[in-house]
Structures are given as structure tokens and as C-alpha cells.
Length: 207
Ligand SMILES: Nc1ncnc2c1ncn2[C@@H]1O[C@H](COP(=O)(O)OP(=O)(O)OP(=O)(O)O)[C@@H](O)[C@H]1O
Ligand SMILES: [Mg+2]
Image 1 (tube, rainbow, N blue to C red):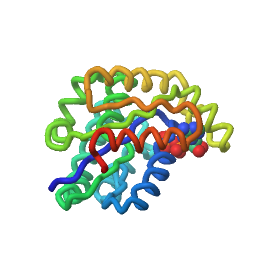
Image 2: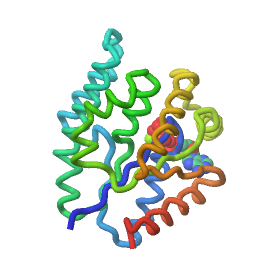
Image 3: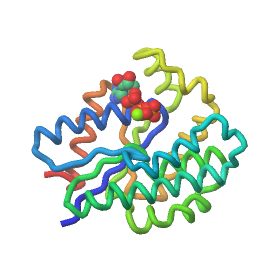
């Protein structure tokens, strides 16, 4: 039987990596056969595309080119990593997926959801997540929390106004895509993780 595909979304510092790590510990203890990946996720081709996107020398890159490169890396990662694991019946958990493109390129960069949906047709039609966890914390709150936890100031350097647009972009997806569940992130990271674990059970992703 095909495995389930769960994606984790949210603004910078919302806790995606932390929550996936805590969830992995629970799943391993439960004996669940799962794979954690992230875009571009260990695929050589996808990583080469990603390095073009992130290369500081490529400041001339237009928003459309950026969006198309993310979409290209995504399909490669799906075909090389995600789909083979799903076919083996694994639960695949992916840190960021197509909703990141909808929020960042579609909303924050202003390309619109429609454009991003069109270029991500493969991901949306052939490999839609069974469940998407949206870690619902504003960029400002996430930044303040992260600032307390470590000295990482990527959010500050990227600009709060941009990330507020990303956050609004995510909120705009909640009604559009019922597969997306907002997870409240108040309280400790363990409390948030318990919410996530129970949600996976409630949705029948795990027993
Ligand atoms: N529910 C929570 N409550 C309090 N603190 C949390 C919670 N979840 C995560 N954190 C803390 O907030 C920070 C979130 O960082 P993390 O790297 O997990 O976020 P991220 O979404 O993966 O960020 P990035 O987009 O940069 O990869 C960490 O310091 C973590 O310990
Ligand atoms: Mg992370």
C-alpha cells in the first residue's frame, strides 16, 4: 500500500525542523517506517538547482525564474526520493513543499497563487500531500523566540515586512486547501509536538 505524504510548513523559525525531529523520535519508538526529507532533499540534481537559486552572484534572477527553478527542483526530488519511498509504503515527512512556493513566490513575491499552481501542477496533481501541518506562529513571534534561543538573525536580515507577506500567504491557503491544518504553537515545543502527534492519529496517518 502506498505510504502517506505529510509536509510541514511555516515561516522561518516557526519550528519545522524542531518539530520534525521530535516527531521522528516518537515515530521511531512506535516502529513506524518513515522517511524525513526536505527540499531539495539529497538529490544531486535538485541540490545543484537549489545552489543556483541561492547563489548570491545571481542577483539578476527574476521572480519567475526563481519560482520555476524551485518547481524544477521539486519534481526532481519527488521522482528521485519521495515517490519511490511512498511506493515502498513509507510515511514520508517533508520539511517545506509546494505551499512554501505559494506563500513565498506566489504571495510574498507577488506572482500570485495561480501562476505558482500552474508551474507546480505535477506536485499538486500527482503528489499532493495527504496532510500539511502549518506551524501557525507569526514571523515576529518566531523571530523573538528564536532570538531568545540562539543568535540566528536570518529573519531580521531578510526583512520582517517580507516575512509578514509570507505569513499572510500561508493564511490565505488554509481555506483553499483543506489538507492544510494549522497547528497552534503556543506553549512548549513538546506541547506543540503532542498536538502534531495526535493530529496524525486523528487523520489516520499513524495508528
Ligand atoms: N512550540 C515551540 N515552542 C517554543 N519554542 C519552539 C517551539 N518549536 C520550536 N521552538 C524553538 O524555536 C526555534 C525554531 O527553530 P527551527 O529551526 O526548528 O525552525 P524552522 O521552522 O525549521 O526554521 P527554518 O525555516 O529557519 O528552517 C528553535 O530554537 C526551537 O527550539
Ligand atoms: Mg528548519
